Amino acid sequence: MRLDSLGGFATAVSQDGDSHSAFFLQYSGADNRFAFSFAGIRALAPTAPETGRWYHLAGYAT
Image (cartoon, rainbow, N blue to C red; front, side, top):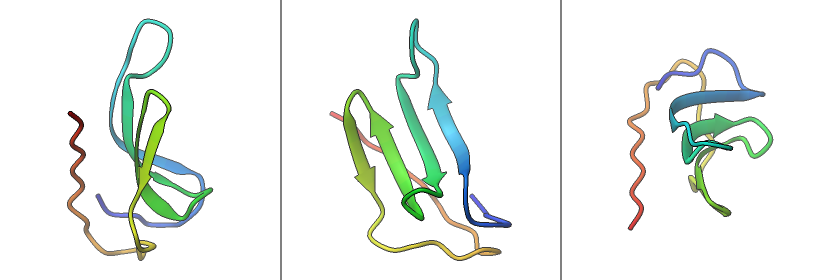
């Protein structure tokens, strides 16, 4: 994923569910971090991303 600007949300991957999305792998402007979120659990990247740089995102849940 490559960000042209910071702020807001930029979703790389998500899966829709019946009443809400099952998960999101995205940039969160509120946290200024990449985030992997699902069913009440949220994991944030340890560092803030930079604009114009490519990032490989991966989320894993057991």
